[in-house]
Image (cartoon, rainbow, N blue to C red; front, side, top):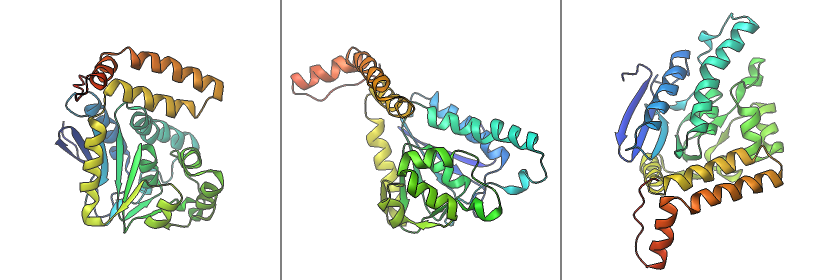
Length: 260
Protein backbone atom coordinates (compact mmCIF):
# COMPACT_ATOMS: atom_id res chain seq x y z
CA UNK A 1 0.00 0.00 0.00
CA UNK A 2 1.05 3.61 -0.44
CA UNK A 3 2.18 5.77 2.48
CA UNK A 4 2.35 9.53 2.79
CA UNK A 5 4.38 9.83 6.00
CA UNK A 6 6.57 6.73 5.76
CA UNK A 7 9.00 5.20 3.31
CA UNK A 8 8.80 1.41 3.21
CA UNK A 9 11.70 -0.65 1.88
CA UNK A 10 12.25 -4.38 1.62
CA UNK A 11 15.70 -5.94 1.64
CA UNK A 12 14.60 -9.45 2.53
CA UNK A 13 14.72 -10.76 5.15
CA UNK A 14 14.63 -7.20 6.54
CA UNK A 15 11.82 -4.66 6.29
CA UNK A 16 12.70 -0.99 6.77
CA UNK A 17 10.27 1.71 7.95
CA UNK A 18 11.52 5.29 7.56
CA UNK A 19 9.63 8.07 9.32
CA UNK A 20 9.25 10.53 6.47
CA UNK A 21 8.33 14.07 7.47
CA UNK A 22 11.66 15.83 6.97
CA UNK A 23 13.56 17.70 8.09
CA UNK A 24 12.86 16.47 11.65
CA UNK A 25 10.08 13.87 11.12
CA UNK A 26 7.49 15.02 13.71
CA UNK A 27 4.89 12.40 14.59
CA UNK A 28 1.46 13.29 13.23
CA UNK A 29 -1.84 11.47 13.67
CA UNK A 30 -1.51 10.18 10.11
CA UNK A 31 2.02 8.94 10.75
CA UNK A 32 0.88 6.96 13.79
CA UNK A 33 -1.92 5.36 11.76
CA UNK A 34 0.45 4.56 8.91
CA UNK A 35 3.03 3.15 11.31
CA UNK A 36 0.39 0.73 12.58
CA UNK A 37 -0.43 -0.30 9.01
CA UNK A 38 3.23 -0.72 8.05
CA UNK A 39 4.00 -2.92 11.05
CA UNK A 40 0.94 -5.04 10.21
CA UNK A 41 2.15 -5.30 6.61
CA UNK A 42 5.56 -6.61 7.66
CA UNK A 43 4.00 -8.81 10.33
CA UNK A 44 2.02 -10.63 7.64
CA UNK A 45 4.91 -10.86 5.17
CA UNK A 46 6.63 -14.23 5.56
CA UNK A 47 9.67 -12.95 3.62
CA UNK A 48 10.38 -10.40 6.36
CA UNK A 49 12.08 -11.73 9.47
CA UNK A 50 13.12 -8.48 11.17
CA UNK A 51 12.17 -4.79 11.07
CA UNK A 52 14.28 -1.64 11.25
CA UNK A 53 12.70 1.71 12.10
CA UNK A 54 14.63 4.88 11.33
CA UNK A 55 14.10 8.43 10.10
CA UNK A 56 14.40 9.91 6.62
CA UNK A 57 16.94 12.68 6.07
CA UNK A 58 20.01 13.45 8.16
CA UNK A 59 18.76 15.68 11.00
CA UNK A 60 16.43 13.55 13.08
CA UNK A 61 15.13 10.10 13.82
CA UNK A 62 12.00 11.90 15.04
CA UNK A 63 11.72 15.18 16.93
CA UNK A 64 8.50 14.27 18.74
CA UNK A 65 4.78 14.80 18.47
CA UNK A 66 3.49 17.27 15.90
CA UNK A 67 1.88 19.45 18.54
CA UNK A 68 -0.41 21.13 16.00
CA UNK A 69 -2.36 17.87 15.78
CA UNK A 70 -3.43 18.02 19.42
CA UNK A 71 -3.51 21.72 20.31
CA UNK A 72 -6.86 22.90 21.62
CA UNK A 73 -8.28 19.43 22.24
CA UNK A 74 -10.31 18.73 25.35
CA UNK A 75 -9.20 16.09 27.84
CA UNK A 76 -11.64 13.60 26.30
CA UNK A 77 -10.45 14.39 22.77
CA UNK A 78 -6.81 14.12 23.85
CA UNK A 79 -7.44 10.72 25.43
CA UNK A 80 -9.18 9.57 22.26
CA UNK A 81 -6.13 10.65 20.23
CA UNK A 82 -3.79 8.75 22.56
CA UNK A 83 -5.79 5.53 22.32
CA UNK A 84 -6.38 5.58 18.58
CA UNK A 85 -3.02 6.90 17.36
CA UNK A 86 0.18 6.33 19.45
CA UNK A 87 -1.23 3.62 21.76
CA UNK A 88 -2.59 1.58 18.85
CA UNK A 89 0.61 1.90 16.83
CA UNK A 90 2.96 1.28 19.75
CA UNK A 91 1.02 -1.73 21.06
CA UNK A 92 1.34 -3.28 17.60
CA UNK A 93 5.04 -2.45 17.38
CA UNK A 94 5.90 -3.83 20.82
CA UNK A 95 3.68 -6.88 20.40
CA UNK A 96 4.93 -8.12 17.02
CA UNK A 97 6.69 -11.49 17.29
CA UNK A 98 9.45 -10.42 14.89
CA UNK A 99 12.57 -8.59 16.13
CA UNK A 100 12.57 -4.81 15.81
CA UNK A 101 15.54 -2.44 15.77
CA UNK A 102 15.52 1.35 16.04
CA UNK A 103 18.36 2.95 14.04
CA UNK A 104 18.58 6.28 15.85
CA UNK A 105 20.43 9.36 14.61
CA UNK A 106 20.21 13.10 15.18
CA UNK A 107 17.26 14.14 17.31
CA UNK A 108 15.15 11.50 19.03
CA UNK A 109 13.00 13.57 21.34
CA UNK A 110 9.66 13.04 23.08
CA UNK A 111 7.57 10.77 20.90
CA UNK A 112 10.64 10.00 18.83
CA UNK A 113 12.35 8.58 21.90
CA UNK A 114 9.15 6.64 22.65
CA UNK A 115 9.18 5.05 19.18
CA UNK A 116 12.72 3.83 19.87
CA UNK A 117 11.68 2.50 23.30
CA UNK A 118 9.08 0.29 21.62
CA UNK A 119 11.76 -1.57 19.66
CA UNK A 120 13.62 -4.62 20.94
CA UNK A 121 17.05 -3.11 20.29
CA UNK A 122 18.41 0.39 19.65
CA UNK A 123 21.53 1.25 17.65
CA UNK A 124 22.54 4.91 17.76
CA UNK A 125 24.84 7.00 15.63
CA UNK A 126 27.44 9.16 17.36
CA UNK A 127 25.42 12.32 16.69
CA UNK A 128 22.26 11.05 18.38
CA UNK A 129 20.58 13.33 20.93
CA UNK A 130 17.91 11.58 22.99
CA UNK A 131 15.52 13.17 25.44
CA UNK A 132 12.05 13.59 26.89
CA UNK A 133 11.58 17.37 27.08
CA UNK A 134 7.86 17.39 27.85
CA UNK A 135 8.23 18.76 31.41
CA UNK A 136 9.63 21.97 29.92
CA UNK A 137 6.35 22.45 28.07
CA UNK A 138 4.28 21.98 31.21
CA UNK A 139 3.20 18.50 30.16
CA UNK A 140 4.53 14.93 30.44
CA UNK A 141 5.26 11.93 28.23
CA UNK A 142 2.05 10.26 27.12
CA UNK A 143 3.05 7.41 24.83
CA UNK A 144 4.88 5.03 27.10
CA UNK A 145 8.08 6.67 28.35
CA UNK A 146 7.10 6.71 32.04
CA UNK A 147 6.54 2.95 31.85
CA UNK A 148 9.03 1.63 29.28
CA UNK A 149 12.05 3.76 30.21
CA UNK A 150 12.25 2.69 33.92
CA UNK A 151 11.97 -0.94 32.84
CA UNK A 152 14.89 -0.42 30.48
CA UNK A 153 17.36 1.75 32.40
CA UNK A 154 16.08 1.66 35.98
CA UNK A 155 13.82 3.95 37.96
CA UNK A 156 16.37 6.49 39.17
CA UNK A 157 17.88 7.27 35.75
CA UNK A 158 14.45 7.31 34.10
CA UNK A 159 13.19 9.80 36.68
CA UNK A 160 16.25 11.98 36.11
CA UNK A 161 15.66 12.12 32.35
CA UNK A 162 11.91 12.71 32.61
CA UNK A 163 12.01 15.07 35.61
CA UNK A 164 14.72 17.34 34.20
CA UNK A 165 13.80 17.12 30.53
CA UNK A 166 17.52 17.20 29.74
CA UNK A 167 18.82 15.55 26.59
CA UNK A 168 21.62 12.99 26.61
CA UNK A 169 24.14 12.16 23.91
CA UNK A 170 24.79 8.77 22.35
CA UNK A 171 27.69 7.91 24.66
CA UNK A 172 25.59 8.52 27.77
CA UNK A 173 22.67 6.60 26.26
CA UNK A 174 24.98 3.62 25.79
CA UNK A 175 26.42 3.96 29.30
CA UNK A 176 23.02 3.77 30.96
CA UNK A 177 21.74 0.96 28.72
CA UNK A 178 19.30 3.00 26.67
CA UNK A 179 20.98 1.96 23.41
CA UNK A 180 22.76 -1.29 22.63
CA UNK A 181 25.49 0.10 20.41
CA UNK A 182 26.91 3.41 19.18
CA UNK A 183 28.43 3.62 15.70
CA UNK A 184 29.64 6.30 13.28
CA UNK A 185 26.72 7.89 11.46
CA UNK A 186 27.80 6.58 8.07
CA UNK A 187 27.78 3.04 9.48
CA UNK A 188 24.38 3.22 11.20
CA UNK A 189 22.23 1.41 8.65
CA UNK A 190 25.01 -1.05 7.87
CA UNK A 191 25.17 -2.05 11.54
CA UNK A 192 21.38 -2.13 11.87
CA UNK A 193 21.06 -4.30 8.76
CA UNK A 194 23.73 -6.70 10.00
CA UNK A 195 21.94 -7.10 13.33
CA UNK A 196 18.53 -7.42 11.67
CA UNK A 197 19.75 -10.14 9.31
CA UNK A 198 21.35 -12.00 12.20
CA UNK A 199 18.11 -11.95 14.19
CA UNK A 200 15.99 -12.82 11.14
CA UNK A 201 18.04 -16.00 10.71
CA UNK A 202 17.00 -17.33 14.12
CA UNK A 203 14.18 -19.90 14.41
CA UNK A 204 10.96 -17.91 14.38
CA UNK A 205 8.91 -19.96 16.83
CA UNK A 206 11.60 -19.95 19.51
CA UNK A 207 12.32 -16.26 18.98
CA UNK A 208 8.65 -15.33 19.38
CA UNK A 209 8.40 -17.35 22.59
CA UNK A 210 11.58 -15.78 24.01
CA UNK A 211 10.34 -12.27 23.23
CA UNK A 212 6.96 -13.01 24.82
CA UNK A 213 8.56 -14.45 27.96
CA UNK A 214 10.83 -11.46 28.46
CA UNK A 215 8.24 -8.78 27.72
CA UNK A 216 5.35 -10.38 29.59
CA UNK A 217 7.53 -11.70 32.40
CA UNK A 218 8.42 -8.14 33.40
CA UNK A 219 4.81 -7.72 34.50
CA UNK A 220 4.65 -10.97 36.51
CA UNK A 221 5.98 -12.20 39.80
CA UNK A 222 8.98 -14.51 39.54
CA UNK A 223 7.07 -17.76 40.08
CA UNK A 224 4.56 -16.92 37.34
CA UNK A 225 7.33 -15.88 34.98
CA UNK A 226 9.23 -19.12 35.59
CA UNK A 227 6.09 -21.14 34.87
CA UNK A 228 5.54 -19.23 31.64
CA UNK A 229 9.15 -19.91 30.65
CA UNK A 230 8.79 -23.66 31.29
CA UNK A 231 5.57 -23.82 29.28
CA UNK A 232 7.21 -21.89 26.45
CA UNK A 233 10.31 -24.10 26.54
CA UNK A 234 8.18 -27.22 26.12
CA UNK A 235 6.56 -25.66 23.05
CA UNK A 236 9.89 -24.59 21.55
CA UNK A 237 11.57 -27.93 22.33
CA UNK A 238 8.85 -29.93 20.59
CA UNK A 239 8.42 -27.57 17.62
CA UNK A 240 9.62 -28.60 14.16
CA UNK A 241 12.49 -26.12 14.36
CA UNK A 242 13.35 -27.27 17.86
CA UNK A 243 13.64 -30.87 16.70
CA UNK A 244 15.72 -29.75 13.72
CA UNK A 245 18.07 -27.67 15.85
CA UNK A 246 18.73 -30.52 18.29
CA UNK A 247 19.21 -33.06 15.50
CA UNK A 248 21.56 -30.72 13.65
CA UNK A 249 23.63 -30.25 16.80
CA UNK A 250 23.91 -34.01 17.35
CA UNK A 251 24.69 -34.63 13.68
CA UNK A 252 27.21 -31.76 13.58
CA UNK A 253 25.57 -29.93 10.71
CA UNK A 254 23.96 -26.55 10.07
CA UNK A 255 20.23 -26.53 10.97
CA UNK A 256 17.62 -25.89 8.28
CA UNK A 257 14.92 -23.93 10.08
CA UNK A 258 11.49 -23.62 8.46
CA UNK A 259 9.80 -21.24 10.88
CA UNK A 260 7.56 -23.91 12.40
